[in-house]
Image (tube, rainbow, N blue to C red; front, side):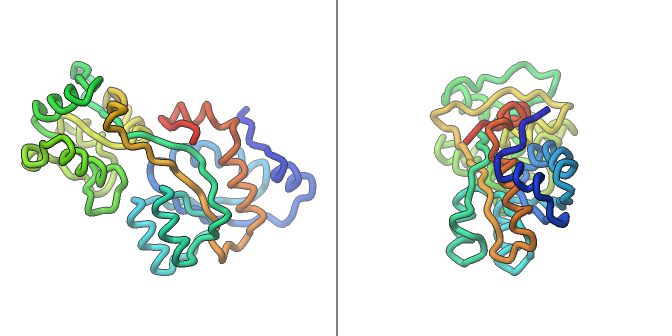
Length: 249
C-alpha cells in the first residue's frame, strides 16, 4: 500500500468535511503517476478528481484564456508565466517529480547507441525516420528535441525524416511502423508496451523537466486541493514515480 497520508491528509480524514469535486490539469508526462494514485486518494477522502491533460503550452494557453481548474501540474517555467498573470497561487507551487527525455525503438530492433553524445548523434543520422512531438503544439519534449538537433548540428539532416506527432505518443509512431526511433519524455514512452524503451539521452544533452503543482486562486475546495497536493509530494510515492519513468524532484 503506497504511503499517501501526510499530516494534512490525516487531519482531513480525522475531521471529514463534505466531499469536493476537483479538476486537475496536467502535462502528459506526469499523468501516469497522477492516475495511479488517484483511486486510493478518492477512496480515502471521498473527494472526486477529474483529470484533463494536454501539452504544457496548450494548458498554459487554456488557463490564460480563463479555463477553470483547482490544481495545475506543469513545468516550472510555465507556472512562472501563469503566476505572473495571477492565474496560480505563487506560494502554493510544489514539485512532484522530474523526468528526462528518452529513446524508444521497435521491439525487434537492436539497442541503439545512445550512451554518448556522439553515439546519439550518429544513431539519429543513421535512422530512416525519427518521431517526436511537434514543437508547434507546445509540447515540452518536442521543443527540446528540435533544439537538440540544432545543438548537435544535424537540424537540416533531420528535417526530411522527422515524423511530427501532434496528438498522442511518439512511441505509437514506432509501433505503427511510421518511424524507426521515437524521442519523448520517458514516462510517455513507457506508456507504449509494443515498443522497446532504450533508455535516457546522455546526461550531457539531457533535459530534465520538474513537474510542479500549483493551486488556482479560484479553487473551489482548497482543503481538498491541498490534501491532494500533499499526497502528490509524499516521499512514499518514489517507487511509483520510478515505475513510471520519473524521479523525485
